[in-house]
Amino acid sequence: MRELSLHILDVVENGIAAGGNCIWITVEEDDKADQLKITIRDNGRGMPIEKLQRINDPFITSRTTRRVGLGLSLLAAAAERCEGTLRVDTSPGKGTEIEATFRHGHIDRAPLGDMAATITTLIIGNPGIDFVYSHRIDGDEFSLDTREIRTEMEDLSLSDPVVIHHLTESIRSSLKELTSHKDSTRPNGGKDGKVND
Image 1 (cartoon, rainbow, N blue to C red):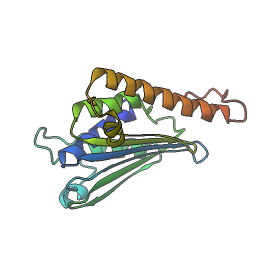
Image 2 (cartoon, rainbow, N blue to C red; image 1 turned 90 degrees about the horizontal axis):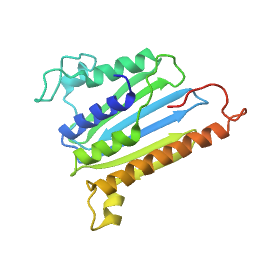
Image 3 (spheres, helix red, strand yellow; image 1 turned 30 degrees about the horizontal axis):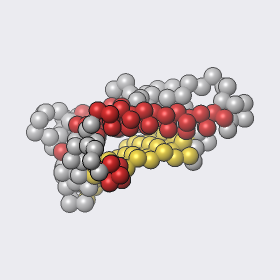
């Protein structure tokens, strides 16, 4: 996949297919440690032990809508290609947590992609599911919790086009601010030729 956000979409859909009604997505970028960490947790049924044992096999899946389960095996390959790892922690009836790490500055690391579009696509496509999204860049954090948004909006729906547009722009603006703050705290003002996601 060209962007890591597409891996995130796929893993989240697996959590929803496993009965999760709340998904936690955390992205942590740490320049000092040269690490990018993506954590996705759900409160679904958990992963069958036979699937967990064959996590790197692209031809195993618990889905009935497709025969090939490329999601986790592709994410594992993407992480390993960038000196990272994939960790899966799952318990029957208690959900699953997927953690993928990458060396942030690795030449083969795919760009993160459009996280604002990823999150709002998940919200639109899954109206009965709640999402908690946190993004940390060198200690600064942006977070969004659809449970809190639903409480505050009362009469409006999260699938309302105006609400979705506002959420998309708000996420983009907040992530841009985090990146700008990161660049401004570098010794040379961020003018090191590094392209940000």
